[in-house]
Image (cartoon, rainbow, N blue to C red; front, side, top):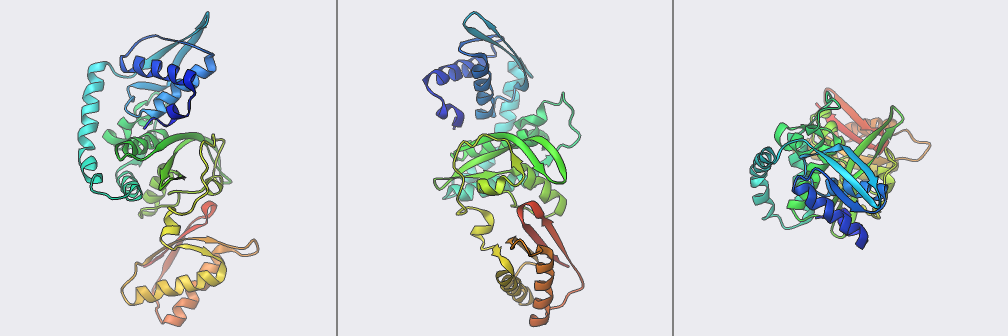
Length: 329
């Protein structure tokens, strides 16, 4: 689904189509009418709308003005023959995925499956170099199983396209109080007529770090994503919790009273061998409350009231998103 194309006016769509078909034909020079910045922006829209254009270097481009035309000189990573071979390999890898999603009744179920496929198969490539183009594309994600944020977000977009889910690639910055600002890419996805932010890259990193599939950044509202993602174009209104992972699983906890009951119920389930020993939730506290203290107090109270005692446990946290994972050993 060509998200950015759908947002352009008639002039922009003509430029888009010219660039799109020229890149498909491996043309060395592309001439379009219009302003240079507008043409450059549309060039990147084409790249982000079409993850199968992995054969075009997403970051190196030559462009200049001659008279009323903007001339673009793309830099191709592979020739046509190698491109077709890689496309065939990617299509083969995704064949089973395409067959499986056809039986899934809802877009939310399909999205969950896409997320699970990516978080369980791809690693973030920390040791990439500026010349490592493949990790910025679906080649890194699907063939090498190692990619960086834009390669992962393009993989998610491509799988959503195959699943007929409306999705786009978002470019902005990641930020938190412990790390400097960095360029970053993630996605917006439309599920049940509502738009959400999803950052598969950060869920992959958290899942690998904690050896547990994480959904901290699965279908977030704008107010939540803004806690550690900045400087992005606000293309759609993302204000729903309806298909957020924690909301769906009744794991959004507000304050001490709800937390005490939630932990108590989980301990009862564990004691009766009906529940997981991994307790995963989002906790919103008052300004004068300290989340970790509330959690430790709730655990101690639940131990006493249920007479369920254990040797040790850990509390793992994503403080920026108020997400916590209690692991009982």
